[in-house]
Length: 484
Ligand code: NAD
Ligand code: SIN
Image (cartoon, rainbow, N blue to C red; front, side):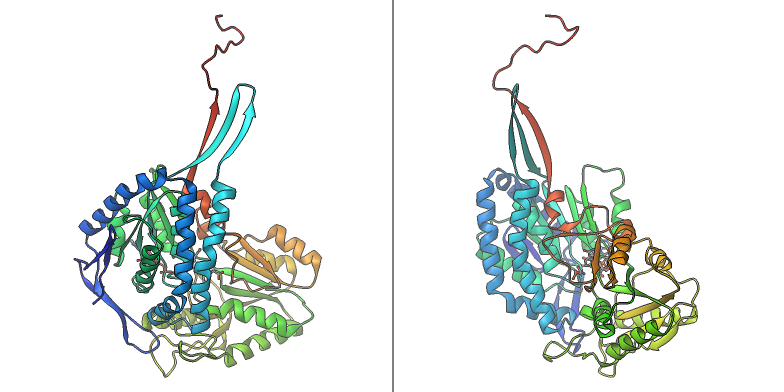
């Protein structure tokens, strides 16, 4: 049984209900332990509070040096990180290794962003000078999603620490293991005790963290949870909320010369990480007619032949979904689309090998009615056929979300129109919708977030600006109509 509470530099057992995570590729237990109790969450917040005030007073250089060391320690542990991620949520080896690599790579980006977006500035003025500085919020609660259980919480915690905050991290209960390796790396880097605390558990542990004395909530997860958190903190503007949520992302394919290239981009957009990326394309929009038919055929051919396997099968493109429940949800979602008039082109099926394994699915929903504007977090692509490009853009924007989108087209004029009119924070041309760069902002309008994009812009929500006009001596001011 694993220890669940890392508070003030020490691991201890959780005091609440026991829970376990099994590997969706083989059913073996990958992590088990007791969830943290409300008292333990409170202790973690108190430890963070005490550690934070000293940390915030340290020079920026000290914080940066420790985080640079952390990058080295993460790199040393890249294999262990990738293995832990694969064991918990089934990510195939190349994908899990890429996540571990992104964790280390993100640290240099965060250091640059801290300087460029949350640093200091000085200018001379007639009365003396003007100073811009940034101040940390205090104690940040960090909630992780299961699909990037290391990279995404890391992408909140590193900028938060650089800015002088302390963190209480609640990993996803579907992927708890990687947090233990992150703690090892922080310890090896010499991060002072109390600045990163971990509380393992599910919703009850999360609820205790929400109700605690925190100054910020840095969340990556589903829109449903994010909206719940947004309501929870209504009327409390003093708590910074950074909500990174999902999407119902569109990809328009419009007359590129290379049909195979278009089909590759579409299939990778929809099926990368078994469709478990927030930026995956859920809806692929194409023109009616023979050319569009050919692209759809090429996409279906890819859905049929892409390799599915576990982390030990080096040539697998897709692993299982995170759990048997997720696999069943995907099947049920497809069934719902069929009942509403969707035509299955390639069925998403649970595979004989069991667990979370499903095949990639493609369903044409052009003639279907009343399709919910929901994210199915799995490898199911909806095809929508339209008569003209304006209609394609209108269908693409017909969602309450706005995370990612794309256009596959060789035509510059189409791209200019799509770029101006498509509502997506990550909008790509002739590139998959998924696989965003950490060196750019990551987030989008609508129910995909609360306009606090992460990645390169995470520095913005980890500190607040303080603007000072400074005169070394108090001097008489004078003003029109003011007594001399
Ligand atoms: P989730 O919302 O189910 O869970 C995320 C975290 O919130 C977990 O730690 C969970 O325990 C906690 N949580 C959930 N409900 C809670 C409650 N009622 N009270 C307290 N805590 C609660 O998300 P998930 O299934 O782990 O992740 C997948 C989702 O995340 C997808 O919707 C995906 O689109 C989204 N996502 C978004 C981004 C982004 O940057 N925009 C990136 C990755 C994933
Ligand atoms: C995600 O955060 O789920 C996806 C990031 C990406 O690969 O675009």
